[in-house]
Length: 313
Length: 248
Ligand SMILES: Cc1cc2nc3c(=O)[nH]c(=O)nc-3n(C[C@H](O)[C@H](O)[C@H](O)COP(=O)(O)OP(=O)(O)OC[C@H]3O[C@@H](n4cnc5c(N)ncnc54)[C@H](O)[C@@H]3O)c2cc1C
Ligand SMILES: Cc1cc2nc3c(=O)[nH]c(=O)nc-3n(C[C@H](O)[C@H](O)[C@H](O)COP(=O)(O)OP(=O)(O)OC[C@H]3O[C@@H](n4cnc5c(N)ncnc54)[C@H](O)[C@@H]3O)c2cc1C
Image (cartoon, rainbow over all chains, first blue to last red; front, side, top):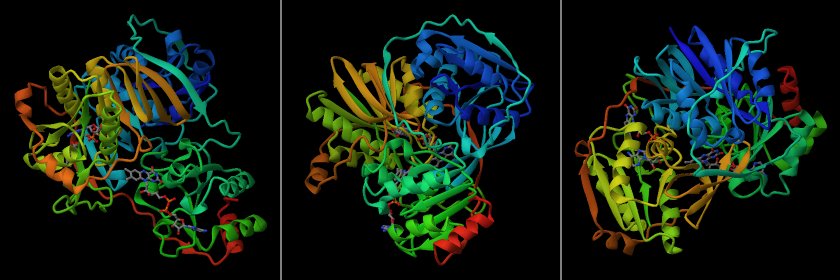
């Protein structure tokens, strides 16, 4: 008899699709209930969106001005309190979930399972270690609540049905700390598709050579309606902002099409794209490791090949 | 103030990990071990804060088997003032590691604790957050920039949406991201000097932490392999192949 609480991720009043992915992971446990918890300053539109996700039994909301930004120290005590009676508490394995979930687990005095890929049983999961070079089967203590983050690339987003779950406001009597304060968020405001959920991604690496040269990547991406990503080397060199990094320490993504351009294919990068549908590699070095996992490889100079590619489109 | 730094030893990031055929673990015999890259960054940040006069003492902490001493010497050679070795033959899970750090905090009263955002062996990404919860202090995870002034840390965090800036009153826990700094190299004379720096050894059992891990790893498997694809000869052929797959 499982009862699962899924903690919703949202930004600027909009529900993040990572929440629906965590819901589909919850559904795989075949629980009696899946409830979604929303902590925000203003919860209305987020709650309405969450109530439409298939499989959700109830949406629980906590509207407090302190919840206007996702500060782990502020959210965790509320989530720990709301978790009473649940067998599982799930978070998406995004920077939001990674930040908050362990804080909740520690308050509950239980272990956390990070980056769940599959559910083998209600307390048995698989997850990657060593940058995805090994997959372990982990058993959590059957008498403890399971706190877990869900590897979003491993789970489809649960659909949006026509039904809507009941929305219920929770009043949690929890004192919140004031020792941590939000100052600002600098977002790469982009009209391009979101890297984490895009169906197509074009990524550039160190081979692109400069910030100016990266325009060639943006142009190709725009032409085929793709999001833009990058290797760590490209981010470190300042060609693109940090939120575009794909890999072990960046975003783990699963687009239908991934194009790696001027990227060598280091293991830490490949970790981020293993679940992509089709991987295309363009690299001037025929020996580059990226070709070992690419479905379609093309050897040559990217500055010559990309214009030719655009022509052929 | 004192800064406590997590300094974990892991399989070097260049090693190609092999899963044992019987699924009982990964091959760790004879493989190169190094400091967790995020912990080198944590130590570097602490050393810079000491060099700026923000901190007086930097202490590296390792939790692990008896032979961890050589690894801790590297942290001392890089510049830490002293090391604490919490000795245990068993690998500890994040909650236990956090409880151990809390015990050390009670004793050392640091103004700042800097850990890696994740260790690249288990990739758990938990210890710092758990420690901050148990300590009831602020956490600033995935730090790309840290400024300390007037009893608080202003930290720029690398998050999915971009860069988030938060302010945390000290004492606090910070976990490092890759772009926080570039760790210095250890120089030979420093290795000699490090020999005289103190390493405190404490048996994990003597700390009275509830060192009872809750997760059981029952099986190790190699990841599913992607099958090798095909090479195309030019851009036109690539576009044709993608169109055929319905991707363009
Ligand atoms: C703890 C840790 C975590 C890490 N996490 C990540 C991560 O999350 N994501 C990540 O990406 N990396 C990560 N890395 C770094 C990773 O190891 C590699 O250093 C990085 O991925 C290399 O990026 P790159 O392929 O762009 O650069 P390089 O390895 O330098 O490759 C550049 C490629 O471009 C090709 N090239 C050059 N010029 C041209 C041209 N004109 N036309 C065509 N091809 C050209 C070259 O042949 C080469 O293959 C991590 C490393 C560590 C230690
Ligand atoms: C040979 C070997 C076998 C293992 N076998 C198992 C196993 O069977 N089951 C299992 O669950 N795990 C096993 N582990 C993993 C081990 O239990 C992990 O160290 C533990 O789960 C902590 O996870 P993490 O280091 O990824 O934590 P994270 O939360 O990712 O670590 C973040 C940071 O916390 C600090 N930190 C964490 N641990 C230490 C430490 N020991 N010393 C100093 N600082 C630390 C560091 O600053 C680190 O950067 C094994 C590890 C090794 C090397």
